[in-house]
Amino acid sequence: MALVRLVYYSRNRLGPDRDAVADQMADILAHSIAKNRLHGITGAMIVDRNWIVQVLEGRQAAVTATYDRIAADPRHADIVLADTRATDERRFPLWWMAAAAIEPDMDDLVRRWCEDGDFDPSRLSPRRLVDLTEAVVAAYMERSPAPPRRRAGAPRPHA
Image 1 (cartoon, rainbow, N blue to C red):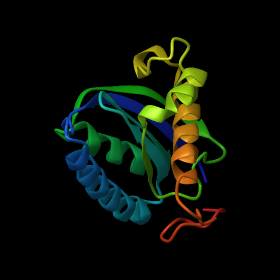
Image 2 (cartoon, one colour):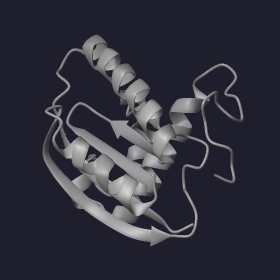
Image 3 (cartoon, rainbow, N blue to C red):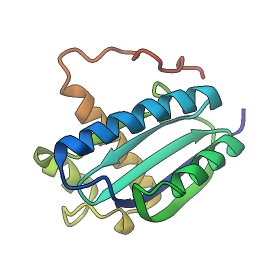
Image 4 (cartoon, rainbow, N blue to C red):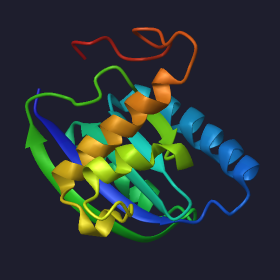
């Protein structure tokens, strides 16, 4: 199956209130999982107070249609398509959509990927954006008491 990986970033317009952001992220995640499952899309999203970065993986038509819907969403501003490329394998094969917040105590992690320690996706290559997204999601998932190997609703590894 021919796959593409699309990476974009945008200004976060979810609002300043941490609880409201968490509620909106839960809504986005539930909606994304349902839609992505139908269309065979996997991926991950990271968020901080200023930025949203998302990686989408799947068939070209499905990924493009999903990105077009996202680009029209008012929770994003100044959306930038950082990269779209063919790929032989998924970086997020176990997630219809994973989501994680870049927490204040993740400064060391962010410094590893962002040379000056300041998270600004416009200064990162698409590959580093994907790597950082994967690292933040992994760190976020490690915070749960017993992260399962395969989350409910996640695609099978060969998907």
